[in-house]
Amino acid sequence: MTASNNLSDNLSNSSYGPSALLTPANLLTLMRIVAAPIVVYLIVKYNVSWYLMGIWAVISFSDGLDGIVARRMGATRSGAFLDPLADKFAVLGALFAYVYVGRINIIVALLITFREVTMSVYRTFMSKKNVSIPARFTAKIKTFVQDSAIGLATMPILLKHNVVITVAIFIALALTLYTGTEYFIDGIKATGRLTGKSTEKSNGKSVNKDSRNVK
Image 1 (cartoon, rainbow, N blue to C red):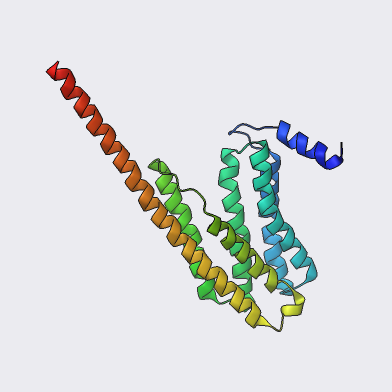
Image 2 (tube, rainbow, N blue to C red):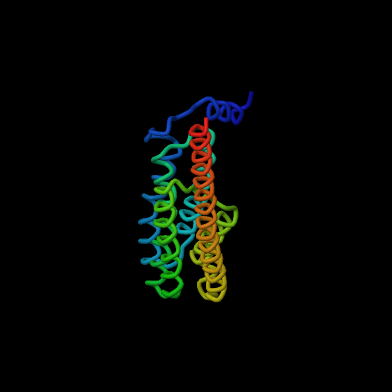
């Protein structure tokens, strides 16, 4: 049996309960949170560098990796909270660092920030109403494009070709706003379905109660 098979078996056989904190997936997520200020510092100090690009590549790769590990070893409530927080911490930190050095328009950064924060609040609000809004594949594409746009901005060979960064970041902005609209509509539809089920259940109870009275 190969080493990769052993690793796969170990991951499959290990499991963590929903309340677990120190899980491999959470450690990967925490690594992204710790690395984010380093990225911001390097952007402000150097603007571009291969070291910076390497660190950002690791952050982007670990974003998908911690999800795979969590699915294999057991998802946790702490992971569900920390993972999107780490994503926003890294992406928004890098965006505003590039706003500071003049590579990205502040309006773009503010619009992306508005969508990310608004959707986080919206999903939290809906969850308190027992309405679940599942993640969409388009949201994964959005995250990939955001990470790619920032990754392009870190590359020294593109320092004098900011038009590439501008096009990439506007594509990321368009996807960010589009997926935000999708989630908002999904929440409204889910609320309607939940209300419909509640009404049907209430009507069913009323019918049963009337039947008992007739008897």
